[in-house]
Image 1 (cartoon, rainbow, N blue to C red):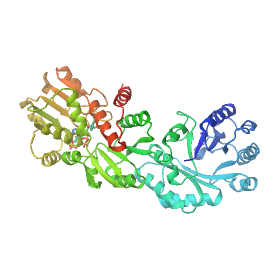
Image 2 (image 1 turned 90 degrees about the vertical axis):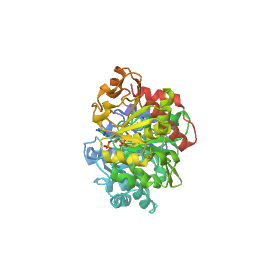
Image 3 (image 1 turned 135 degrees about the horizontal axis):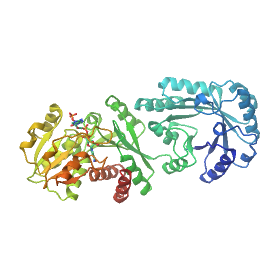
Length: 488
Ligand code: NAP
C-alpha cells in the first residue's frame, strides 16, 4: 500500500517542520494543504530539500477546503509550487483552471478530484465520475461520505469496474464506515491512500494515521461488529487492544447495519474477505439465515454473536454462552436446583437460558412479546416456565438475570421489574456492561443481593471470538484494563 501523508498546518514553518519529521516514517507521497494556512505563502523554497513526491493542494471552500481567493491567485501559486519542487497538483474536477494547468505542468502530474461530504452515489455514477476525472488528468480521485453498507459496496464495486481501464485512481469512502476503503486501498487498486502524520491530526472523517496504516500492512485481518445501534459497544477497543498487544496486523471496525441491510452486509463480508464479525442487538437470530454452518454453541442457543469467514464459508458461533458460564464461575454460583428468572427473549436470553438449563436450574422467563418468548421456549426444548410480570411476586427466585437492553447507554433507564423482588441470598446478573452498574443492579444491591454486571461476559465472549478468528489467545488483563478505563 502506498501512503500519502496529508499535512494541514496553519503556518508555512510548521508545515515544513512536519514534512521533514514525517520523512522518518517513509511516506510515498506528502500532500501540503496550503488552503489551511492563514494565507498562501510567498516563498516555498523550504520544501526543496524534502525529497519525496509532493502534492500541492489549495482546496476551495465548496469542496471541503478553506481557500476563498481567485482562480488567478491559485494558478500563480501552483506555478510557484512547481518551481519549488512540487510534482503533483490536486485540482477539483469542475475548476476552470484545470485546462490552464496542463500547459505549465508537463513535468508534473495532475490529480483531478471530486468530493461529496454528504453521500455516496450509485456504482455507475462513481465509475462515471472516475472516467470523467481520469480524462482530464493523470490521477482520478473521488471521495464520498459513506452512510450505509450499500454505499460501501458501491465504492468497492466501482473500484472493481474502473480498475479495468488501467488508469491511476484514488477512491476513498469517508466517515467511520469508509475506513475499510482506506485500509484496503491496495486491494481496491488505488495509486495510494491518504493518512495523517500522527494520531489526532486527521483532516478527513475516518482518516487514519500513517503508523496505524503501516501496522496493518497490505493484508490485515479485518474483523468488526454489526448491530443497530452500535453507540454503546466497547468491543472495538477490546479487540484493537488485543491486536496491538500481540503485534497481529488486524483491526476491529464498527459496521452499523439495519435489518434490511443484513444481506448486503453478509455479501460485503465475503467480497472483501472480512475474517470475523460479532453480531449484536438486534440481529443475533436474524443473521442465522445468511450463514453456511452453525457451531454447536449457536445451534443449541439458536443465536449467533460471532461469525467466522473461512474462504467464503460463514460459520456462526455463540460465544455469549461462554461469557455467561464464566460469569457464574467467577462469582462462584452453581445454578443447579436453583430457581432462576430470565428477563428478555433475545440472543443474550437464549445464551443464559441454555446455560441455566444445562446446569439444572428451574428456569422462568418473562418477555415483552409473548410470541418471541414462545419461540425461545420451543427452540430450547420447552423446559422453561413462561410467566407474566404480574405473577413475579408469587415466586421466590435465587437467580435473576436481565437480558434486555433497558438501562443500557442509549436506551431508556426505567424499572424493568418491581425492585421489591430483589433480596439477599440472591444472585442478580445484568448482561449490560455500559454503564457498569445499571439501575437494575443498584436496586438489587440496595436489597442485599450479590450482583454481577456484563463485564465478565463481555471479556470472555470477546476472548473466545478473538481465538476463533486468529487462533491466538488475547491478553485478558490488557483487555480488561482497557475496558475498565473506557467505562470509568
Ligand atoms: P435482542 O436479541 O434484540 O433481544 C432484546 C430483548 O430485550 C428482547 O427480548 C426484547 O423484547 C427485549 N426488550 C427490548 N427493549 C425492551 C423494552 N423497552 N422493554 C422490555 N423489553 C425490551 O438483544 P440481545 O442481543 O439479546 O441483547 C440484549 C442486551 O444484552 C443488550 O443490552 C446487549 O448489549 C446485552 N448483551 C451483553 C453482552 C455482554 O457480553 N455483556 C452480550 C450479549 C448481549 P421483545 O422480544 O419484546 O422485542
